Image: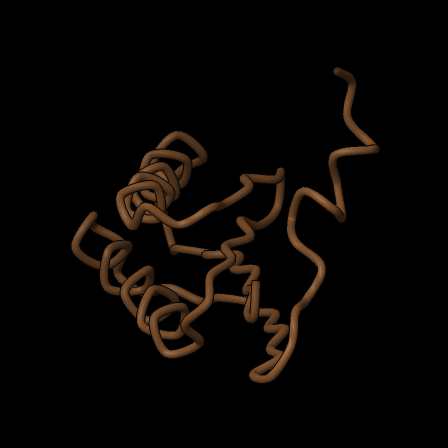
Length: 100
């Protein structure tokens, strides 16, 4: 892997159920990209070879939330990028911490 992003999408919503519904739509979009991802309690990590593709996905997550009914959306983004090498993968970072 050459790039990894973690995105926490924070849509404005009337209540917790609506918030979860909108975030679920964002996660469904991320799943649809076909890239390897990991959903955590506060953010979703996505990894791939193409930095620009990941940045496009980050941008589209905001559009998905708005189309899902959020009047506004905030996001926290973390990016790791190594254009000429390899980064630690999601699995290398978290697998050992989860029950098998």
